[in-house]
Image (tube, rainbow, N blue to C red; front, side):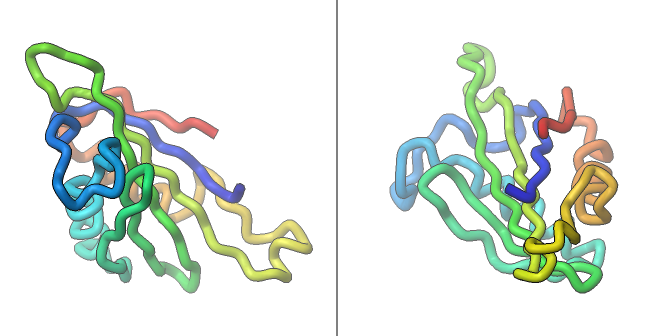
Length: 135
């Protein structure tokens, strides 16, 4: 897969209340998707409304002539003090043309502009901790 994962910890987003519209009881990430979509829009990135998957939520984005799929989901830590404390994962997948796939071009890396923007958004908020890449 042509993707980069960013992981971080916070208690800002819902990891404890299963909503009636969730496809599965583990489909957390709606509030993160809405929040991230607004932050990306503020930075001039074209973003689709969030959508639900059976494992979490996603948004689609366009920037610099490229298209991206950003998937997000979280897992609670089981913290008694804060039921919403947990680890979140944002998967940033860069869409490539058939020609790019055949020639090995257009691959995503941690140097990608959208990856940098998402990372900067996360680092810019003191409620997020342990921000790191997992490839």
